Image 1 (tube, one colour):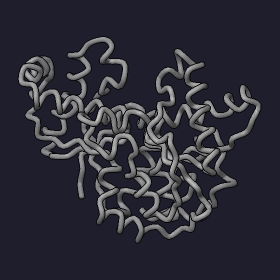
Image 2 (cartoon, rainbow, N blue to C red):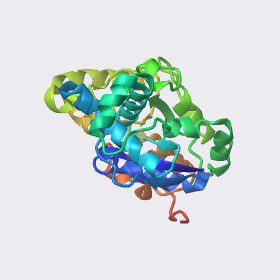
Image 3 (tube, rainbow, N blue to C red):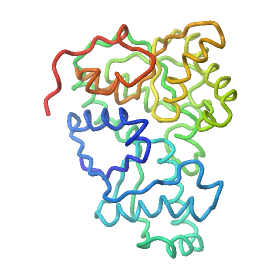
Image 4 (cartoon, rainbow, N blue to C red):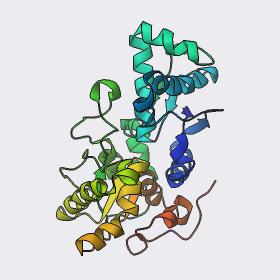
Length: 293
């Protein structure tokens, strides 16, 4: 299976371990990733507050690049990028007047032929789940993980058309197939504060603390995420929240792809675990040999 691959800005910077771990597991599952040549920023969450046209033109320009590759499907791991590319596709394929405005400002008109997919959509396919189970050789039965999807991945449902928007299960299905126990909880899609981390830090402290409290209350010893912003808030802000609340969580925060790689016997260092601020060494026994190329 071959997909055009749009990493987005975060996966080439702050969320590089998401990119590294995804690229590591993909060949094990027979997935080939062809990075979109010349991709640009999708606008993420800020662009739409500046200009509706800009917020659509940026993702649509990237979809046009996918068409130039003669690819019909693009894999988009970052939740924010996923939402922007899905929005750009929907708006330009259902509203001719919007498509006309957008196509006037992009280099090449977008023909609307690209399917925008998240890795969880692809990995939660029945056949792929069976392949994940086959490749999972490490015993991670000691993990009790809560899957945190965040507020962007499934909403708004009319745009995203992905999983159950209030109580998604695709990440749970993928990790369970890898032999990792995932727990039911009520905060799967609660907001962590996202980009408010830099401008309204107190809001992020409050929302993130509520997520950590709920994870702890259901007995989790780790959190799995699919969003670089979610990872940043839950991982980098955790020690500050512990100091403010005079308590200790010690909850490692993994990208779901890192957990998949660990289940396949890949070393934690190979998957970028050393970049995390909340230490996972006591929780994860790392394989001693690097995976085959």
